[in-house]
Length: 425
Length: 44
Image (tube, rainbow over all chains, first blue to last red; front, side):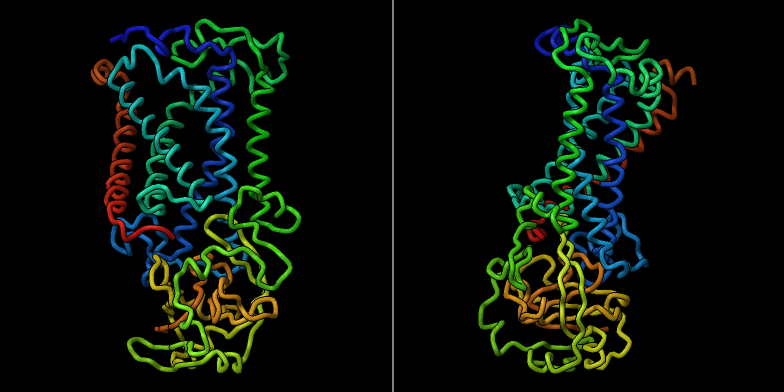
């Protein structure tokens, strides 16, 4: 059934001669590896939270339906930069994909207004799956960017929405790739993979389309105002530029100055505590007197209280110094020199010489991850510490004074600040 | 096989792949909608 040929449904409405199956295929070829890296590292991040332990699950707990999880496999503690690398890759690949995704949507938008809208049940279902693909992609990428920018205008929880949105997108993407691979092959066979890139403006003609396939190639093309090389060069430059700017906040050093899109990744200065902060002391809303001289660390085993230590008593214990990164889920990371007491030593003081897990509880009155459970390998790692000092100075309030947890390769949100209680099991 | 091609417009594997996609999407959407209704589980 044909719809009235009005507005974008008119055959001559979409006239750019650059659109067509070859352009869509090139953009897809660039987009797919980025989405694959982004998806894998996203699920790796979910694993790194170890949602099967204690209260780590941000949603769903260990009940069925908590999504993909590598139950039984503990998140490793080596190399110490593991989470910084995986989460950095997640954010870099996600941001780098955005210009290519937008270009791809531009390249295929005439197909949204295909007329007739569908010519068989199979075609109708395929088009319905595209709603999931396009809607899922826009949702996942936009919520990811909004989260990085520390802006929460939506009235729902970011983590489960982003996670399940990604599953919708990936399911539809797998179908789309399976259905479109033959079209992609035909487009490359017809025009070559790189041949259209060598055309200057005078020789830039419309794409011919493919026999027997409805494509986005224009039926009544306008004259070109841009070569395909210039279009793809612009998209590639935008993508590479975003990747480079984001890389700065992951690897640090001189590249850190490029991280202009990182609201929490640029808080650097000369002092020992001058490095980025995710949640500040003011935001955590902890009463000031709780972190004063009266502060005590309570060590427990099961329901029993086994020891109560002041900061001075902790400082009098054997101190360990380790250079370790904090890697934030938003993609930035920073490596600092931390000094404190081994978690394994605190377990011994609590009367649990071979701890399986430890529940670390912050003094924050509210917040999703104010209580975090660390696994056996994390508690017993020789560089897993309750840090009291950083870069030779006492921790600042924003960095978790009087004490915070630092463990190799642990996601930043699990490096609990303002620790009040630790319960070993 | 011919019947499904005539009436559906593609082969049975196409139909199976589409149905699997919709099933996975429905599973994910139902969880997302259920979880996002709970305002206590907000913000990291």
